[in-house]
Length: 392
Image (cartoon, rainbow, N blue to C red):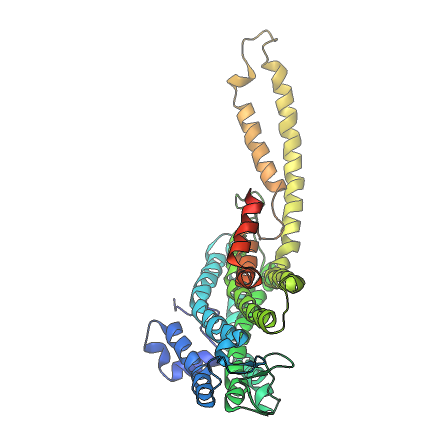
């Protein structure tokens, strides 16, 4: 089977353009070369132009209200961290999502008689993936704002920075607005387009018909692998956290903003992006609730019969009867305990294929980029003292 058969990343207008240029056949490390190419386009000219204008390095003689390129942590975080992360993480994320789609196709989650419906769904998703229109829209949305003559915006209101030469935009500022930002925006939009494709798969799965088993040991009726697959969009959360951390660092250094004052924004982002990225799994909740409810009805009936038989056999096999047998001499107790374990498994089944580890797999990448802000908000000694106070 072709290696792109279940891929969500390898397809579409951008993929066909790379294929047409022969780029896809030249190297096994395509993501590395694409990262280097994007950095060359987005960052290289900025370094050259700001070096030429004298706004590359922070200098002691410069005005405290003028921010050089290498002191603009917002821009550095966006272009040197977030952009490479999204490009380098794409192949690994695609491989794991591809594995999840294979699992859907090969496992008993979808009954054999409904496999043609699943194949039709995957064909539809591949058709959407290979369509030129969605990625063309992403290209337009990414580049249109800058190329439509939108004004160049400064890093912080009220402060001068490397984007301007006096009152007019500098050459570096124009390049940043016309090329660097649109390239980053395009990569983010392509990730979200793949996120929508995966959401389409999850949305249509109940219509295909799922053969769920609430007693499955994974605690999610056999769908726990979908929660693990959802974690593959964690790089989106991490990239957003990196960009916010850079912006917050600028505010803390140049506008005397406190980390305490930013706490609501940080918490809001972590909670918001986590809910956004796990939201597609909620589409499976109705069918999982239905399966759990009917399984509990069925197991309640079985439990009543098992309990009645157990109560009936207990006096017959007790030590007080004429016989010398004990209940421990029979397998009834073991079978009853086994049934109880199965029932508890059904009762504790999650109605969304999501575990706490899946949540942490998205929330922690969103929060981790914010942690270095602690080193700016307080010295290492103060931070160590607070940590020791909490541990003591």
